[in-house]
Image (cartoon, rainbow, N blue to C red; front, side, top):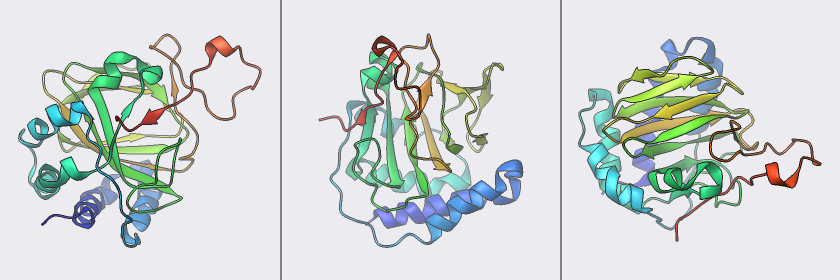
Length: 237
């Protein structure tokens, strides 16, 4: 039977393969791997599966994938419905995003009112994201350094004001601290492995004009209340 420890092992192996190819992000990725490799025993957690996961996780797991992804995807296919997934609130980036995107953390601290991940860490967050077809995750940024490896589905990715570019499975995507980025799915769902390192406690910000916006914790306290939107990623009941 697949366990969350097995998933963490496959996840670690996946990003270990990227270490020689991570260029400017090598030191950050090495820190992530050190945390993954030193993770202790998992704590107990309750499964939460939002509708987007029920509808699209299995479909994303049977899409064509690369050999190095097969073990991890198979583990997710077997255990994905037993993990604690989170869906963004409508205040984050609109109703459509709230219904069409979810993520699960394998490792990390209690964060933004959420419970801690199965494996505790104060230094990194790592797990998976699932994005339904034909959905835009609008331009946003955060202080944390971020890495993605697309497991299945080919999304269109934008960094800064650059063009959207197709990133097929097996692409390492590196977002430096505070680099604006956006993701658009096409006619298939997109399943990604991701990790955060650095300032993982500061809340992301969605670009003005892109649905709602999020505030970093250190923004000016006297900003007009109408411009505020509290970051709220919480389990779907």
